[in-house]
Amino acid sequence: MRVLQTLVSKDGFRDSAHNGLRFRALDALLAIAKTNKCQSIQLPMGFLFATGEVDRDQLLDRVANEARGASMTLIGGIDIDAASKHDVTKADVLAQNLPYFGFVANGRGQLFGPWRQTSTTSTNYDPQQVFPNRERTVTVAGVEVSVLLCGEIFNPNAATALGTMRPAVVFTPGHASMGMGLIPALQRVHASTICPVLHSHHVVNAESTHAIAANGQHDSRSIAKSWRYEPMSGGPFWYGWTVRDV
Image 1 (cartoon, rainbow, N blue to C red):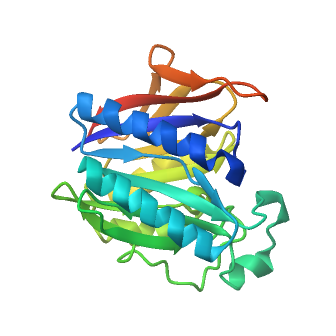
Image 2: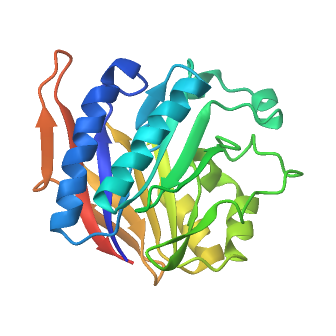
Image 3: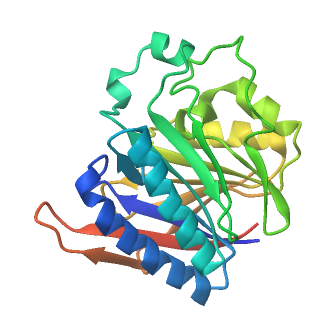
């Protein structure tokens, strides 16, 4: 399967007023993916921002329609309400009340999810909670793919659970500011699943996409030569990509 792996500017992150701009970016990415003969696009978590669950579902219906119209699978996420990582408490995690959701929309317009993120760090996951590995594993372009949402990559139980599903690839859409622990966490996911692990998130500057290859090696690729932007009052909103075969 060929994947268009993306990085997205933090400009407009968690701002519902930017959803229109992000849908325009999605249209452009769909065209780029078609040109590069990709079957799927990996977007970050929080690519869209909803004012509540009703708005979330309406936006996801639009995402599914975009996927169907382009015959392209979309993997990504949407946040709701006043979502902020800094406001998360362990009580929120234990109550399964995080306002972050992931999804997969396939080329037929079928929506998997929205899946609520289960944890945000290596310390606030619930060791007694069984990770929903079957729900998070779906068929894309004829292969089994699994999805971990942002901070779930730091939960060793989640990685172990996905390993039992034997996916062909694991997608790990993230939010932003993943920190120095990102690559080791992705490598731990690979150690459990023995398959490529692809990551996408929001960043300030156009840098590199990150993945763990099938052989377990960190594979960082620059997007400096392949990015677009739209000028905004607060700075340029940009989106970059890398094409990967997994």
